[in-house]
Length: 457
Ligand SMILES: Cc1cc2nc3c(=O)[nH]c(=O)nc-3n(C[C@H](O)[C@H](O)[C@H](O)COP(=O)(O)OP(=O)(O)OC[C@H]3O[C@@H](n4cnc5c(N)ncnc54)[C@H](O)[C@@H]3O)c2cc1C
Image (cartoon, rainbow, N blue to C red; front, side, top):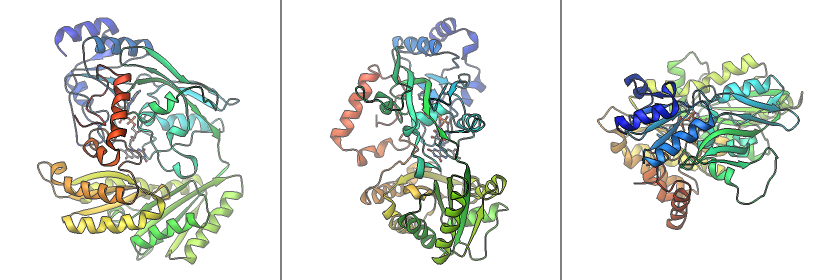
């Protein structure tokens, strides 16, 4: 993007919406990965009209545009194309309406999911999708990645709550998909197509989500085990038994030891893995189910279980889970994170194969995550090297190979972005990939929307 184009864009949007100070460009250049790309400008729209004008201009001048939420993405999705526009939604962060009667909320994409959840909870309403990043990731980013999270087991993922989207196409056209009605089968489901499209098909400017009543009671059970296999096996057995908690989270041996060594988290002697099970429901029911689950786990191989229903007590126990990412960073200079997902019955076998892969390649692998969904965050740990992604490509390839052999997917919730685009053809066949690329071409014929993401160049 040259000086003349920047001058014209500034004239079109006003000086406040277009930034090009070096510090703004550097701040816009990264996301939650180690990747970066410096844009020519950061555009910070306040209205749908400004987004539309920006995209029309970018389309006419063939300038790449990368939508940006809070940049917590873990696959490089909001890393800008160098020299393009970073379209930052920080200023479009309002809740537009909440209807108790219709059980819907309408919000702008830049609102933090945690802020939306808190506002709704104050009115007895519940927006269930709950990525661990809820307090710092945006609704727009969650919709673009189809974020999952802790409560997906019982309540589903972001896709299951998005009813309607106002979006701007690459040429500036504003479209409205879906409606506030909870059901619709009027034509192709464009809303679902946009959810999880990683900023490559259209840019969201308003999102309508479905709500539920806030559960009356929430109870957490933490169970400690003496091995990775015992913990994972118990989590699977619990669900096979017919219990239906809202979250089942797991930490393997290396994850647990890094959390215990770098925080003040407490666990019984001999603990090597841990399972957190959270259940909710009407007054009295969740406590009863939690006690039954704790008893079930103790009849099995749990060393000990702890129950918490008081919100503060629960927060203290959930803190163990929140410590994971920094704790793993503490024990390793390099941490490459994948988020594979397999059918639940295959999770113990996946963990066994991960151990083999780690031994074969001489690296350490720490796995944790949403085991109830079969979704593990698999972290490859290694010493510092000039290009860790290149060095560890064989490990990543073997992890994806094992996942696909077990009937799983290379991404349960983080998306493909830049980091997994070279592997998508291992999962999607040639006909399916060709169809995806045709869809991209229909929405964005000039290829300006988040180019280079999802597909190999
Ligand atoms: C510690 C930590 C924990 C996490 N836990 C989870 C978890 O439990 N579950 C989970 O699913 N993810 C998790 N994530 C990943 C990340 O938070 C999610 O992918 C989240 O949805 C990204 O939101 P964001 O606002 O940061 O978006 P960004 O990272 O800024 O962008 C993500 C993608 O959305 C696109 N985008 C952003 N806004 C728009 C818009 N308005 N219109 C169109 N496209 C847009 C971007 O172009 C990009 O492709 C975690 C990340 C961290 C760092």
